[in-house]
Length: 70
Image (cartoon, rainbow, N blue to C red; front, side):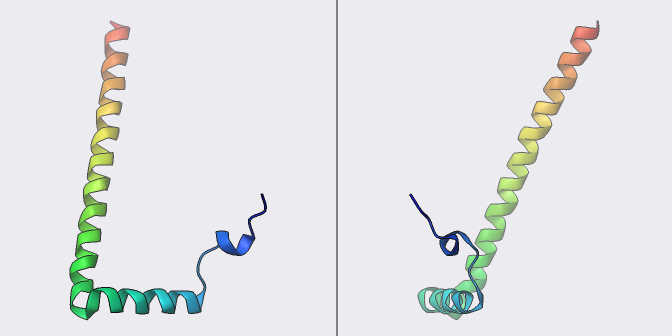
């Protein structure tokens, strides 16, 4: 199946303008800062959870290494 490269690329200048206008129409000017804060909080929580999982895995590997060397 052939998929044109245009569908796989990032939006250009005019597409971004249309996207921004659509967001303004859907959410209104007053809701956008609240919406962006929510996105930022979600990203921050995701990164915190990712870092916690990474730390737990590293701690488990370090503990395994300590136990195997004894």
